[in-house]
Length: 313
Image (cartoon, rainbow, N blue to C red; front, top):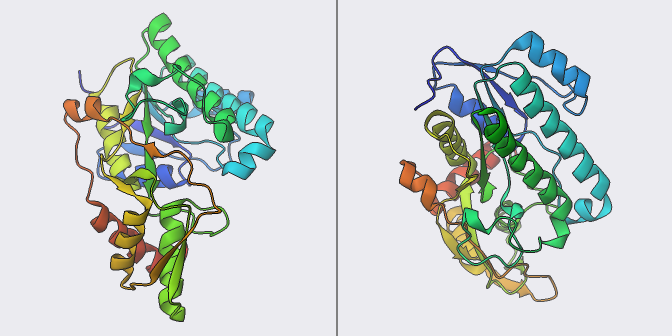
């Protein structure tokens, strides 16, 4: 049965993040009332505060996109923070949602929940079948616990709590800091700055051979709203584009979109990471959602947004 959003109060937890902001934009097209709260107004790691907030606001639905996130260095340096804070905030939100009669909850996982050497493309069945990638295992373990808590509420109480995990994202709200950004925004900024300065080359980390999948964050938001309305199941669903390119191909695509054909130089001293990381989104597509935009279109839009916002995410 579909979940009708008409007149519903939908709480987007983490609305200032990249995914949360995209969800707020997407939900503006639905006949519902979107509820948000800032970290200063509500500390999601504070159990009593979260309990009281839910009792007062009484949302009908929740999308849990809030999380403590960071790069490899941050995960390695602060494992307690990444594990404990994420466990606390997601447990507080999920338990308070059930206690206050929330009708539907969607928990946002991460592709890092899967084993480092999961068979490709990665299906949902690969969860908990092997060791995690050590560089972000603390974050991944917390996300796995959130997925399992939603499954537990379904099993014990029949709660309509679901989970989904996206592939690599890009778009409005992304991080363009060259020191700690992901590969797509980093390359966008590198090509833009090379164009501005007339630099003859752009340096790409690694060999350029690894394969990666990318999804525009607004397409993720559309898929999540689709799942909120039309999915009720135990399986935490993959949300991907199915668009897989090598890092070299990504750099060449970005060069075309920026309009600057600099020479590509590959820094072999930098790590490649996992050779391939593609998620199987067949279950999602079978439900009726398969609306991911093309990579060139998405990159052009992301670049235009970044440029018009003064070089900010």
